[in-house]
Length: 182
Ligand SMILES: Nc1nc2c(ncn2[C@@H]2O[C@H](COP(=O)(O)OP(=O)(O)OP(=O)(O)O)[C@@H](O)[C@H]2O)c(=O)[nH]1
Ligand SMILES: [Mg+2]
Image: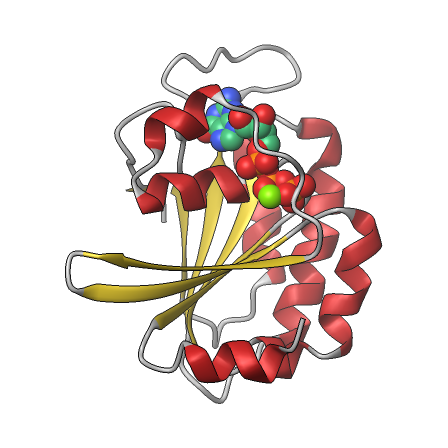
């Protein structure tokens, strides 16, 4: 994809970057933001192949959401030229599947790469979504409050003090809800 062309055409839009491992729920979140909640909740979206840019309008505001497919094959490429990808960005959201405990370490690795690539000279709004925090989420031995709190501690250790950020619990199985835990 020709990135500069996309940047040009979305100049007046608020640019939002969504990153995170494959299957973490990024494309489903985009569908919810676009207002397609019913469809996204009951239709399994296909894995996103590389970068997918969605331009849409909500009320009077225009958005350009850059959804970075999280499959391993694509991730390295994003960081080869991240300054170009992140040009003009207003918000970066890093999405983690809170139910995928086995891949917490992998999610932290990807987060580290992202943090190292963010240009902190420009103020950006950075959020971490602990996603799939469904209303009926059942805790068990592998997914407990202790496990999650320990994971949140590790996330905080990765993010340098000069980056302002928030960590939120999110789910598509509720009217879109974002509750701050920090
Ligand atoms: N339980 C639960 N499942 C969700 C939620 N959001 C998305 N999913 C499911 O998670 C799976 C992956 O969702 P996608 O939106 O395709 O994930 P993605 O991050 O875009 O994946 P890639 O495109 O491969 O990077 C789908 O089966 C969704 O239905 C959620 O809040 N709770
Ligand atoms: Mg996707």
